[in-house]
Amino acid sequence: MQEYINKANTLIEALPYIRSFYGKTIVIKYGGNAMVNEELKKKVIQDISLMKLVGMRPVITHGGGPVINRVLEKVNKKPEFIEGLRVTDEETMEIVEMVLSGKVNKEIVTNIEKQGLTAVGISGKDGNIFTARKKLINGKDVGFIGEIEAVDTSLIEILIDKDFIPVIAPIGKDMAGNTYNINADYAASAIAGALQSEKLVFLTDIEGVLKDVNEPSSRISHITLSEVDELVKDGTISGGMIPKINCCAESVKNGVKTVHILDGRLEHSLLLEIFTDKGIGTMIHKD
Image 1 (cartoon, helix red, strand yellow):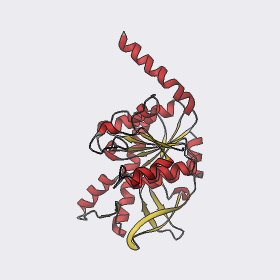
Image 2 (image 1 turned 120 degrees about the vertical axis):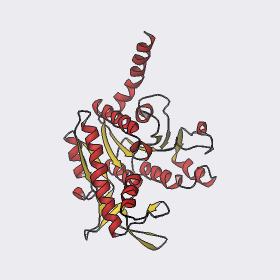
Image 3 (image 1 turned 90 degrees about the vertical axis):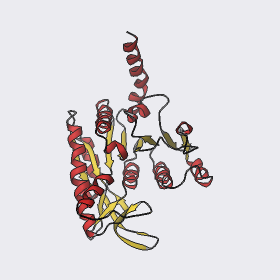
Image 4 (image 1 turned 60 degrees about the vertical axis):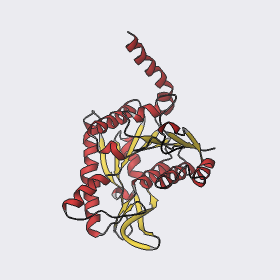
């Protein structure tokens, strides 16, 4: 009997959060091991489905690096990265678009629809969602890496209003029609800011921001905008975590109420963060 009482208490704990976030837009950047491990894939889609069914308005953006790497290896192309960004020549760009807009995007849509919901897979090229330009790295042209100049949310909002879950691949184009590969974190941040979403959630392979990278229990639960620069200066946030935390801070500055960095390797991490009192990741918010 106690097991059932505990389940009921869990539902009661979630009730104020369900009420608070009803009708609110939540942007989820889906990436990391949660996109590779089959059991975790199922749990993430279940979480997003439950969010939708209790009245939230989820929008998904996604990466797909491991799948892209596997396809590149099949055509004997070695993946190259500069400052964490994929070097993207013309052939690689074709493969990236095929994988992200095709295989990965449609697999997510299919998994959502297995839950009895409706989803639509699109890329940032559709409806001119992302107007992009070539991104130079240290002044060097490294191919079709793009940075976002403008975001048009018209198509996304139509899909949400028609009760679809939008699933967006991070591909954009410029005014001349050239296609660009856009970092999925930046794409999620841009969409969340343009939609003025309630939350932006990054599913990653880390527990959150840690005071000590060797100690998972040192997770920092809350970070304000003013603390971000301090944590970078003192080395608490370093390396590949810096661009991610900068994305988070930029999103909050652009109107997103809270940004969350979650460990997507943990089953039902989305539900644990959004529907419980303690949460399990790091939340970035205004001072």
